[in-house]
Length: 369
Ligand code: SF4
Image 1 (cartoon, rainbow, N blue to C red):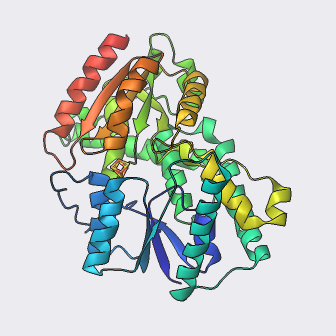
Image 2 (cartoon, rainbow, N blue to C red):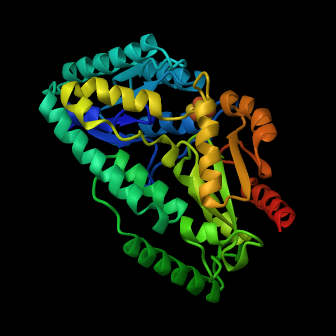
């Protein structure tokens, strides 16, 4: 089976799978041997890492990118110019409230489908698409049903696995077991004099959203509940969750592109039976709040509801230095937010980043106590 790499939540993995391709979320990998090339000045590290993943041969046969920001357009041009892989650039309208925009997006999905067929895929029948959609939808709903029993990091990792076609619902119990083993190894390392204090996970841990809600006030034994907001995360960024814990906070809400914000809402089953592709397009195009949308008020509505539901006491606004879209949103977010916001700007594979971020986090948490 051929594999199609993608990195935008606006591309439905069930549409890819319906054409006989395996969807593969990029650059979601911790594979040994993957070279992370230091991003060049002016290049968003996420976009750069997508390009690197393609260059170093992460196993994909083709890639689909979107026009949701200039950096992604740039990467599409680069990959196409180097002729590394067949690349499809999907045009995603920034306006989304009109029928014309919705039809345009639907046309783009159909164009993507024709391209996949030209690459050796097969055009799905309506019933094949519905059947696949059911499987993905069940996996999404099953995951959401156990969200309160998972940490933000576990939930995000499970979403990314789902986007790569892993439809098995993770069990929180197994995830906890895995985490306990990781903690044990970490303690053993520390006892053996390996690692450093900042790598240690505190013994009393707030793993879940439920516990996050109970951790209001002073943060108690669980740490101060925080949200992380911003664009996409690359695999190395997941260390940030541990870094927050090491200085006395807890990320209980991942509001980045990797987290639950970018899951589509449930599709009306009758509409799905009548016209599955139109229903799918509608769900992905109109229900995923994102920063590039115009207007993007839905992002703020989603965030307000989640801040309340998770008992969030502070927002970590994490943005890449060269990301204009999120940078432009910073001022409005500061004016809007009911809880303090810390800006963490990230350059990429920078040696001093961990120390710098850790210092800023400590100061922020001190202020929240
Ligand atoms: S982080 Fe910003 S610049 Fe990078 S791909 Fe996302 S929107 Fe584009």
